Structure formats: structure tokens, C-alpha cells
Image (cartoon, rainbow, N blue to C red; front, top):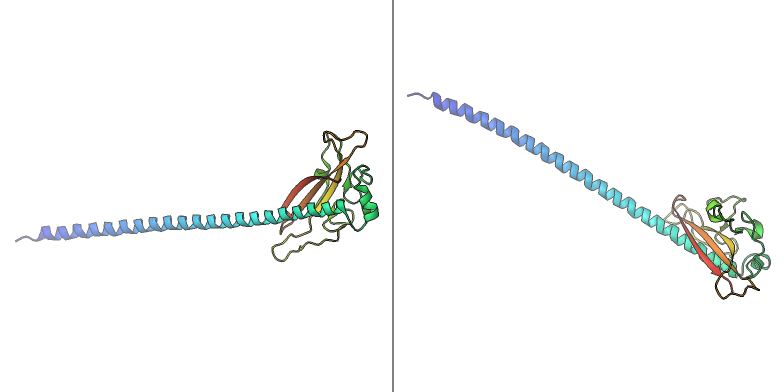
Length: 208
């Protein structure tokens, strides 16, 4: 009897099993790579989502601070304020006194004449981030005595919002030409937890 064919079959079977073990290793490595790539992609999506949420939160804080500045400016125009006799006279519905080219200082701080046609708007040229004594903008509460919570600790605006007020002619139809009225355009900038996060709002205010 000859057993050589049986030996050859066993050798062939061993080679097949060896190839099968090699194929399983390659499949496992491919699966590990796929899982790793999916995990990295999922972590990146989570980080992007967190950043977007944080940016939206900061933008909302800046927006609310700008809204607060508009309200503060309304109090400033209506009065009373810290310099009632002099500053309130500037907000007469007919005079418009105290408004200066390039914005005023002192009791006229933040009171601006509008830019001429073809020039950059005043609110575009003024530096709202300037907190020095030469600033052309009004800080929240300067003339109203109101306060707003700010600081670098916690989720709050890094610095108080600021605003300027421009005087404009009231061209509403039906207004008497013999007694021209004035409108006041308020431009306010609010800040988020970082000064770089900013929101700008405007309103037109008529003081009757």
C-alpha cells in the first residue's frame, strides 16, 4: 500500500490553512483601520459641534449686550442722566446742538454728526473697542448710572457695550417744514466673552 498521496494532501491542507490565517489577519487589519477612521471622524464632528455651539452662545451674549446698549442710549436721550442740563439739551427734537463732526467729548461724548455723502459712515469709522480717555463712544452707564455685569470670569461680556448717537433730519411725510424735527440714530456694539466676538445693532429714535 502506498501512503504518499495522503502525505501530499496533508501538506496541501497545511498550506491552505496558512493562507487562510494570513487572509484573516489582513481582514482584521482593514476592519481596525475602518473603525479607527470612523472614530476619528466622529470625534472631529463632536469637536466641530462643540465649537459651533460655543460660538453661537458667544454671539448671543454679544447680541444681548448690544441690545442693552440701545436701551441705555434710549435712557440717555430721554433722561434723566448724569449731565441733565447740558446733555439733554442736545437731544431737543428741534435743536441738535452739541453734535460734532467726528463725535464729541465730555458731556457731548458719543454725539456725532453724520458723515457727508460718499464718505464712510461715522459708525463704521469709530473704534468701539477703544476704552481710553480719548474714546469717541459712550460706555454703558456713563450718563445713565446703569450697570451691566462684565469680566473675564464666567460667561459674560468681556467689556461693557458702547454706543454713539447721530442726529438726522426727520423727513417723515407730513412733518411741518417750518419747524424741522430731528431723529437720533443709535449704533451700539456689544461684546461676547472675548472682545473679538462682536455684535452691532442700530435703531432710529424719535423724541417727541
